[in-house]
Length: 274
Ligand SMILES: Nc1nc2c(ncn2[C@@H]2O[C@H](COP(=O)(O)OP(=O)(O)O)[C@@H](O)[C@H]2O)c(=O)[nH]1
Ligand SMILES: [Mg+2]
Image 1 (cartoon, protein in one colour):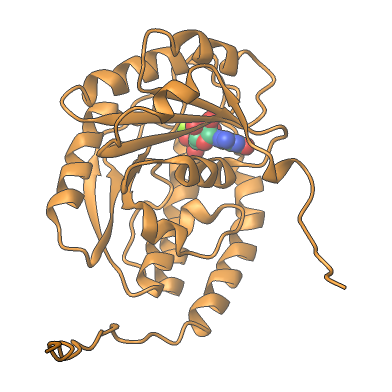
Image 2: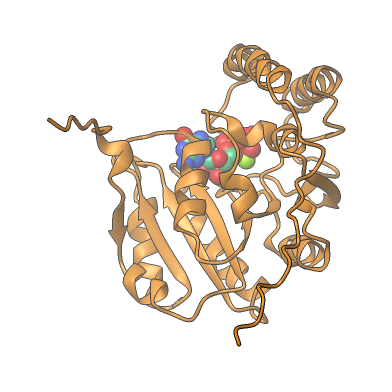
């Protein structure tokens, strides 16, 4: 008898909203812009319009992923989708975190290149096309161009905590990344989906890309103050999981066994038939 097992529960059911079907049936985009949002009702409309302006010259789609917000983030986005045909609004049934929301968006993305931005408007959408163009023009060995925030517009306590966390992570993982918390990153969809998934994965993308043998580049980007809503992370909460995750990524690296590059043999042409 065949026995089958399936994961059950809301994680595997994705809800589609608004004009998603219309955006999904449009011509294949060059770039998918993925934005994870959780209780960002005050920011999402302006952000979606700014992204649309920044990518006006590109065949693009925006995939906003609402992570079961308690406010009207999702309703505001769906209302906007009538005005922005490139906007797709997806949602989780329960809160699953920023990394899971990014993964949901990347899985849904139809373009081979993806760029992510924070949903609170702190990343400037005007910086995003530069990263995407650099990735498009780079060789296939470059899997990601990651933004590094210059002049961070956050509290002093957050800046210190972030500097310390980045310093420890960089020393332990040797990923050469100065600012993995920056939400602005352009990467190849295929490369991202080749990485092992875990909660808070988004802070370890450079290390995990290097682990798969890809090259990662960094590009300075701007940063803006949060104009609405509240930060979803506390320094103490972040520290707790950061140590746990760091140990996990060190284990992953220790078990990586790189190939040094994969080659495919050129086979001789088959003999011509008489
Ligand atoms: N989907 C999702 N996004 C989240 C969650 N927590 C934070 N975010 C998003 O991740 C981004 C960064 O979070 P934020 O609170 O601004 O972090 P900070 O800039 O470090 O203070 C924002 O777009 C948030 O909406 C979450 O649980 N789920
Ligand atoms: Mg923020």
